[in-house]
Length: 165
Image 1 (cartoon, rainbow, N blue to C red):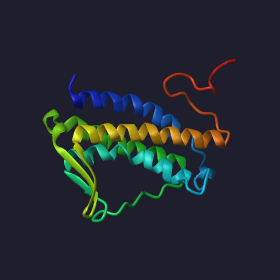
Image 2 (cartoon, one colour):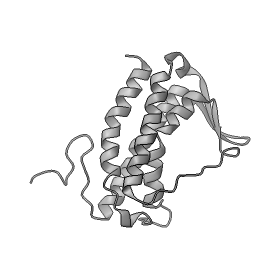
Image 3 (spheres, helix red, strand yellow):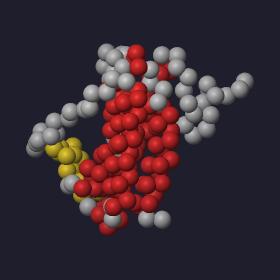
C-alpha cells in the first residue's frame, strides 16, 4: 500500500471518531473554556474541523507563511455548522490525497512566520503531524466535554460512558 493510500485509509477511519466527537458539542457551550490559557470550545472544535484542509495545503504548496497569510478561523456558532464544516474539510483532504503522488511525499514543506522558520519537513511528515493534530485536539475536546459532564463516545473501543458495569 502506498503512503497516499495509507493516509487515505487512516483519514477515513479517524473521520468516524472525529465526526462522533464534533457532533456532541453542545450549542450553548461554544464560549466555554476550562482555563484562562485554554482555547474556547469554539476555537478548539473549529480547529479540529479544519485540520483535514491542511492535507491539501501541504500537498499543493511548499510552505505556509503566517506573516503573509494570517490565521483567520471560520466563525462557527452551532454544532450542525461545525459538522458541516468538518465534512467540507474532510472532502478537501480526501480529494487532495486521491490526486496526490507518492513521489511528492519527500518534497520539503516549511512552516514559517516571515523570516522565522518553525520547521522544514518532508510532506509525508507534515501530513502525519496533521493527522496527529486531529487526534491530539480531539482528545482535548474529550476532556472539555468530560468537564461539562457530557458522555464521551468511544474512540478505539468503548468509552467509560458506553461500558456496562
